[in-house]
Length: 329
Image (cartoon, rainbow, N blue to C red; front, top):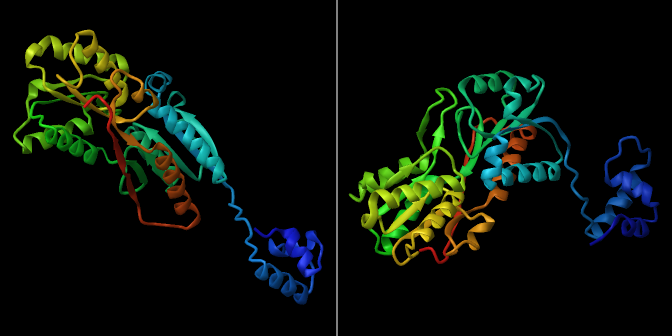
């Protein structure tokens, strides 16, 4: 690939002059003839100037996830690290604000935000009052105002159920967490459970006794919920479980193994996220791979579209997933 040095040698001008001409330095005083010779040399060598991204300042990263939640669910930590990485790559000056600081810690002169976590109506109203530019990751709390990018959990849930049915399962259970509503302080049905119930009901396969949920997406929650299911159902335990997230699934596998229940010969398990430990548990976990890197990259690009390209139309982007089949199904 041609360099500025190559262009300088072909055109007969210094590297400094060539560099300033090709980078459109307005303070440089040279003749049009000089510029033309440099441009001709660059064209002959097929020189392509490296794109320099303009710096975007005063962008807030609202990380509305507690330290405990991050510790218990690597999904959120990965999002934080990837957002920081792509912000640096795209020359975005990112300021991190955590849930413990509260929304009022956010300066009123910010020019946009990236957000992950659950936000109350009051918090959303505050954001609306200070900036029209924002992207939510993993949720869409204000789809008429702000962009969002998230995995398509509705599709994943349907696809997982179809997959289990194709394998001959008609008794399918669900183990998952709940959605904590920041406005009411109450626990509500998570999107995966809502879709699970609706889709199995359509197929006349829904059994309320097979659904076990509790707040939290950590390993301990999955362990306790599966133990409850085993104790309650005994020999009537379903032949398959769709589990809301890998950490819960890891705990569920532990409970099944402790009770000597063969996986997948007696109970099949399928989950979501494909965290690194999923391939090392016993048995290795069948799960849907969520491309967190692409989610975070897309979030940064959506924000830049709003800021730099003046896009007005709001976008909601769903990132696809890939089923990774292992030995738990």
